Amino acid sequence: MITRDDVDAATVRIAGRVRRTPLIEGDRPTSWLKLEYLQHTGSFKARGAVNRVLGARESGELTATGGIVVASGGNAGLANAYAARAIGVAATVFVPETAPAVKVAKLRAMGATVVQHGSEYAVAYEAAVKFAADTGAVYCHAYDQPEIVAGAGTTATELLLQVAGRGAGVDTIVVAVGGGGLMAGVAAAVEGVARVVAVEPVTIPTLHTALDRGGPVDVAVSGIAADSLGARRIGDIAYAVAVRTGVQSVLVADEEIIEARRRLWQERRIVVEHGAAAALAALTSGVYRPEPDERVAVILCGANTDPSDL
Image (cartoon, rainbow, N blue to C red):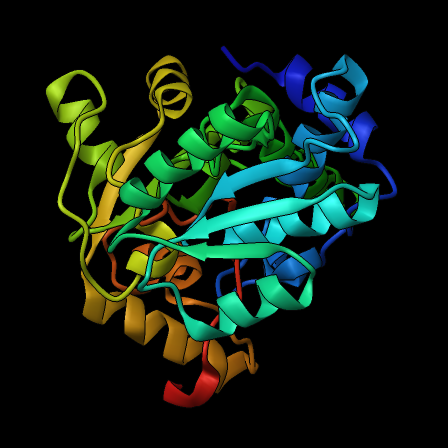
């Protein structure tokens, strides 16, 4: 189980190796946008990847010859390739055959060995796990490992400090959900301080379905945000943290995600991937309606996208 203590430990471990990303004012009074897409490799996942790789090195699990392996639709692969390169070990990344070309090219540019396998994340994951067992490489899960989740949660710790520095506080943090690592880390980091609203595409309701069924189950994967939010099921850690902390789950349609992404570009010249825009779509579509005096922060978590369709 992940708690605020784990997030605090991750904050210390990764200090100086990740960026402090900007916080800007949102469209409503007392609202903010956390620009985490400006993190190394273009997404929040660099935080968890660095925490996982450093933790594995500290424990002796990671050796110079074994390297790491990860399965990813793109962002987790980029993050772990970055972490491995920074520490000086090899990285092998399994991605679905549907992974965007821009992400695959970036992985190779970072020096990772890329293996394209299967039509979705779950198939690539099975192949990566087998690779780890066969070679002794350290497996870095895209979202369902304690160090990964705790590292992701440092986004919220940083956000709270930034808002406090402006003499304010936060009631609600809105975050997109795929496998749930970011949501779980954020919810653990702000437990007892702020609530979390978890946003998913209607076409990939991993958390929403798990909360309805009483546990993680497989769901069909499709839609505009499948490249970054395309996990087949919510992570066990994410589900446990969501239940413990009372995370609220909401769903947004593809057209609402597209519109939120378009508005970010047209009104702010912010370019994010569809998965990141899903969080803002909860507000712009009215699926989540804050109270008039509610202090809300939205985490824009990734920007590895093709901007040509903006």
